[in-house]
Image 1 (cartoon, rainbow, N blue to C red):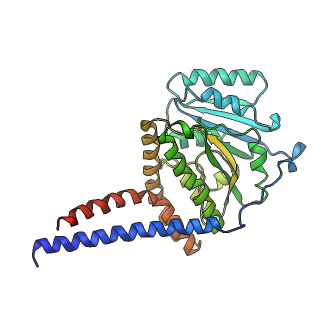
Image 2 (cartoon, rainbow, N blue to C red):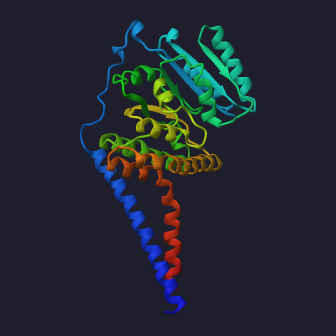
Image 3 (tube, rainbow, N blue to C red):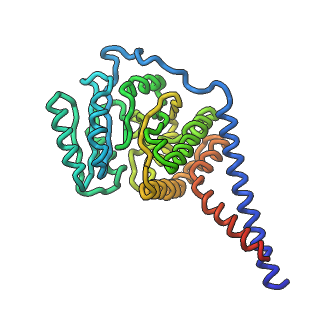
Length: 338
């Protein structure tokens, strides 16, 4: 057998492997779509007025920021308008900025502190651990039984806490995650495409995983953690760029549950220019690979069911689909000349 024939067989085998991988991905997506289309199994809406008077739990809102001068002030203004008892609410502004954002947050924190809000500024000159490092450090002074986290570009509704906290009615509920919506979806074709991609995740994938009893993820923002869940699961760890995915899986491996609320929308702005989108996607792809390397051995060594392990593996390796698709077309090009 000559070298050309051997090369052809090798390329054909690699091409078939790519096709199998892509087909499996499609089947997993179809399975989540099937679960999504099933009736029931989602948490029933809980009336927010079930919490009255002193029954409201203490809540800490954490706002991690880095060089967000255009939205930092708007974010803080929105947080102090939360429809929640002021004496039960603490706001932590975690601003590691190196630009004029810090001046904005200092002014806002002083303004609202003078008005009687329990609000404080945490500024680090050493960004060790980035967002995870800021969250980890701030947790030591977080007084809330529950911790809500919002990134700089989010604008949650004022009844967000009332609508989400009622779902912590089971002691093993560690996280309540809400659905992202998009303030600037119609800005350009770029934002329309991002919105479509995120809607698939938040409407089909997250709901499908919830209905199927699979592991979900906290999406880094627009959700609420039970503080004891964070502590019990090992806290925020800075060894991956997707600290949210990492802690979500560690918490669920410890027996905590994540409740997903598709009917509670949290508006946010999408990256409006390509460099911002590239930076975001880089973090998500690299962080997903780092988390897979860290968590997959623990997932497969755990006692969770085989379907949960398989779906969790697919979930964390979903970023590998892109190089496989590229390899598929590259191999197809080479084989066309054979």
